[in-house]
Image (cartoon, rainbow, N blue to C red):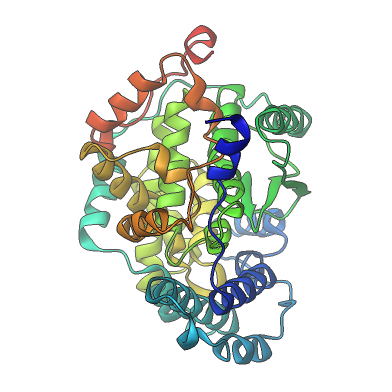
Length: 406
């Protein structure tokens, strides 16, 4: 087969007309409804200082930017989409599932700051199941922090490394791109939301953690968005329903595969589960902070950040998906699940059978890009270790040497 013929063979089959119209409308609504930004509290540094000044007893009321979207009008447009007229039952099921998820997201933003928010969050992201809470507590009890590393890397070096990473991907796929924004009000050091890569303006981290976090954000979230944008079913660009656990599981695994997932990071994921469980039961930021800092030994800044994230909007259970997603991903890999196919776009592990059908019918093609860390000389050995390592031992006591990580 010639190179031109091979390129044509990798082009997905077009969706039928109604399915394409609904898919495009859902894509646009997903872009307009930036629910995660709508639930990000303003002035995080001021909240932390006020909490410190109160002796870790009180937090000022959380405030948020107003939603850009008219939520009532958006829901009306969403529910008017002709999903029942979609030509393929397979596509109809996937797009109806996404329609229901967007409806729940609209409801989540609408209920921000009210007593109904926590139930809306559980409806969308799930509660904290007992087995997950047990795993989280076991990790907090057994996993110890690794070697102490100085937070010697700031925003200038982070931006330089991000641009170098983006440039490398552009050599592999010229259309690869994402917008980078520096933001002083993030509740994390880095995050990707709606294709925009946000970096905290005051970021400080050990240099050994820089590449693993870049592989989490770019190598997972941006790469899968790029691959999903090539599919006829564009929901694979923004995410099929319930895609978060697999995305975040892949992101955390990327940190390990890239050379440094420290014990502290695994403990943070476990602490997020504990915090989400406490938020469900009505505990506030001071109580969550005290549990994480005094009972489980997390540093004060980590304990506060986790507590604040868990109480966003009135109790956001999304943070439990990181450890849940990692657990599900490791179980999948233990069963000899294929790794590369997880990067065709953003989806849930439960969609694997449906994706196989989409591939058979030509609407989905193999990924255009795989993460840069898959080019490491010993990548196969690293992945084999992930397939055989229990989650509570899936971390590194110290960063791999530069030669090992090269």
